[in-house]
Image (tube, rainbow, N blue to C red):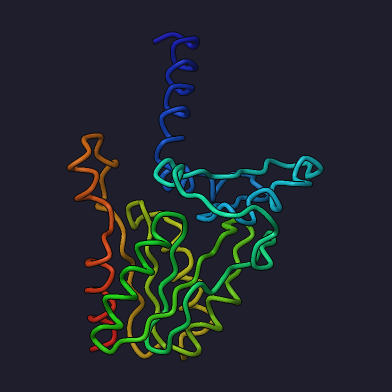
Length: 215
């Protein structure tokens, strides 16, 4: 393989990764990225994008192809800023941390859990770099349980990093081992049915929450 073909192959891979945003996110957490945000709402997107051209280092805004049909009002939103997470649903029994598409599935899981008498708090990180660990810690201080939900395998993932940081800094807050709900240790399947089976569902998230609450 020539140097030119190697470069072309790498470029093709980069283009392919655009359609699998969580895999791209995992990769770039280790790169020299100064800011990286991933929103699941229309509101706040324009507000966060403004001014990023003045940042000297790379800034990544991650879009999710399955959220292109989501509509909503424009504007600053609920105080959306770089490095600030949002509590999108309050709860007392378990903290679910999820972004973009998984934000919606975590909310659906919280509805399933509410029917069973379990109160789940949902935290949307919004900003991956810098990451608002303080909001997650404050939530876990209320619920004493943590589940990170992501669209990527566990190894070298943002969810694994959050769990590791929280265990290292505030282990005494936990009443149960933190859990990571994500895909298998494989690439995301291309076929629609296989991809749907690979991705976390509200039912899978709710099952993990029941497990940690019953611990």
